Length: 225
Image (tube, rainbow, N blue to C red; front, side):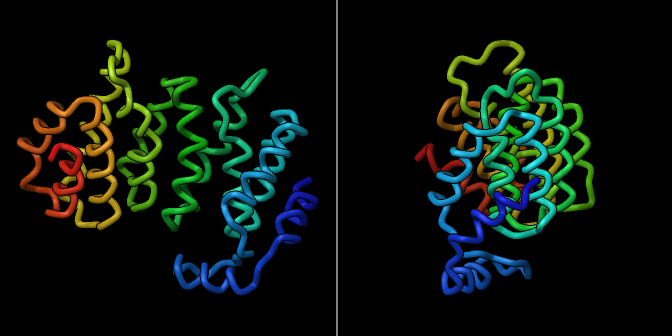
């Protein structure tokens, strides 16, 4: 079912830009050379045409191609606050993609789709918590990226505060991880939280900052200076 949608992506291919993207992303996969606005325009049109089950089917097929732009398009097809009548199949598909994460761009787009599904049903965080114990670095990182919406509430209710503290506990467990992308994700989560709850970020740094890499501490505190 995904073939016509892949053909639409391929029709916009730019070989020169594709080669530059291969060099930039440093991953050995097919790149078509599309821009984000081009993918956005296509997936917006597809979302208007397809019901949710069809979107899930197309997204699954596009993801399986392992083509860079096809994976971004798969994620964008499912990035929507409300999926009716049910979002469970979309969530199950998104939550299965973590095994394939191998670069920040693809992982971040998939996590943006996942953020909407977690906000729709926070009980799904139980599954995400399992990612924090993975040996796969990109899976561990995804647990922080997919929960970024909980950094953004100015006046969180009790349930939102509980999630925030839960994820900060995951971050605290990561502080001794030497992987650059893990440290960057900790700093990113704390930096975003500092815009809404600076005192909590200062407390986290007081408790765990010495174990973090200096660049991650600097990132966490960047908005507080």
